[in-house]
Image (cartoon, rainbow, N blue to C red; front, side, top):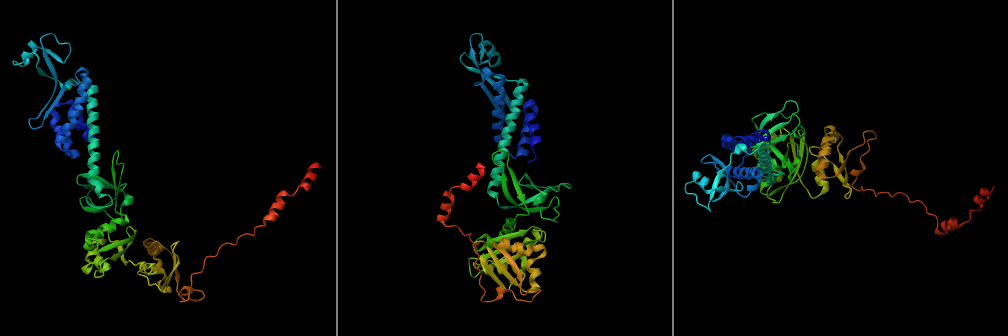
Length: 412
């Protein structure tokens, strides 16, 4: 939030200038989105602490009255009315009291007004610090109450500032400023001031001190949340997003599955005339999206994940180590691998398998990939040969044999 300096100035005005008190109070409430009643309670507490330092013998007798409707801010010491000479500020002689209130009587009390401007510099500084601390705590609580329930969710914010040098973008959500750093922005995207943008809240750090809300447009779950907004079947749970892999600004693969056999998961995500997927693509600055039907069969899922490439056969090498071999037609090899290996990498992240992609025939020998043979079996892993261990008796004999030779050498 960017209200710290102004809030400190307003807090200073409240302490040092009684005439500016209510103007500063209104400014504080506006800048920090705090209700006036809450602010008044915090200010009362701060001023009481300040007055008790200035009047240490009267700390239980000080009263603070703040009436925003009547624009009144006063502080008093409650004095006992006595017939004799007062021994401290907690007492007042009856004759003096009658000059203030003609109805005063011995045994009663009267309010002595405190001149706020004479509290003293240290007392005023203490009040300022107390108010600033209270505001920090209020801001912390407000930040958490506003965003804790929105962690890992998508929100729509308004772009308020774009820094030309560092590239940091400031966005505003319900009066709170958040920062979208360059590494969390979609590569190649241009964000303009005044426009709305959807961001994903990746988390909140520093919850116990000064909370900072971290936002992103590159996180893969932003795509999931965008589809939830556009596809009612995902939002209500009929269609489930099983897995997502993403290279922000370039391509995303999303695997979906329908709990209802009458609902086509892929069709629901695409929408009539591609309306739903187009809305998501537009929000992601034209990023390509492959919607993959999820399958319980690892072979089938991996085959689908390599789309748009055609796959001839997928062989699971090890389920434990999550490795497999995929055979594709020679003219599909570059498509399966993708530019800079992107398609293969996204398919691997989507499925969780390490994928070894082979062409249908060896380009040098013309031999077919052995995996295409229907009788092909995954070779058993070959264990490293164990070294021959000497017999136990030989070891024992070696250990107990007298070292006569070495003894002779030493003697010489």
